[in-house]
Image (tube, rainbow, N blue to C red; front, side, top):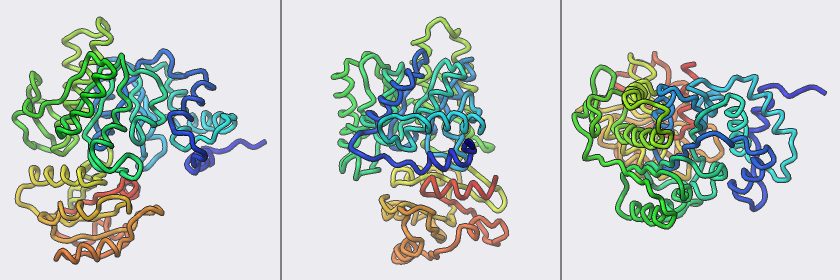
Length: 423
């Protein structure tokens, strides 16, 4: 019988939908039990939140790799290639391994219908086991309490990034409700790292930490940031005792994401006391922060004419994009390219950027949930800013002759479509 090719495996997994009433955590728990718990013996770091999960994961993976740990990283979604979801030490899983492990999983009878995310998680953990990873960083897919990644057990370190309004139909209508879902990853025995939050969200996390008897809980304090500035394509800043940190991941929000990764690394180093010298810990943190990259997050794809992409797909993300552009390019205005999903607060997203906009071009993302480009353009025109709906290829054409800087933002699927033009 002919075996499925890599392309067929990825296509089959990508089209898997979950049926029935079981939540992701229950489906994944059953799968991992049948696979004899591939995560057994690996240290775990679990990351949840609305914005910044991917960036914190990237910073932390680079820090731990620099410290000599064989580090597995599981994130979603991918922008261009499926293999981006599963990495070891920064290297993506080879296509041959995707096909091999994918065929094994698709042939198994799990007695339930796993979703694409469930299959990806199982593939990642099996691959990390084969690769003898010392530590695995798992990014939640959606929420936390019922997320498939919450079935892996008690992590050594848990991180919760910024909380904002997103996936409200599933997670809740208020920040407190959304925070309670994200707080579902907090377990007794973990060390907890939190980014700074609004008072009501902070209280939700504090309550969960108390009820789970979490003994180690640290929150990023933005008042410890100093000397923040943009210099020669890098952001430079100090955080606590770490003076003159440099990072190539751009955006004012990355200061806090990097700080969360630093605190998480310190917590992990405390877990593995004696395995890494104190001087190497700081060296690894500094080197890791500098070397970290994350595609599609304030990424400059072309210098001339200037073209940047950012996966700002909700109002919190767009607010961070706005603040970052104002810091990096004071007094300038921009051509914006936008493609978003219909369940996002795109009105608030647009309102945020109006003061910085020369004009907008809107694109319909290749997804059934996308807002139609002309609908977006019509809304923007009611705000007194020029806007036209257009094809994506026209927006990324470097010969378009448009003066000034262009910034494309919105759905990560949209950013992924743009990235494909540059690969």
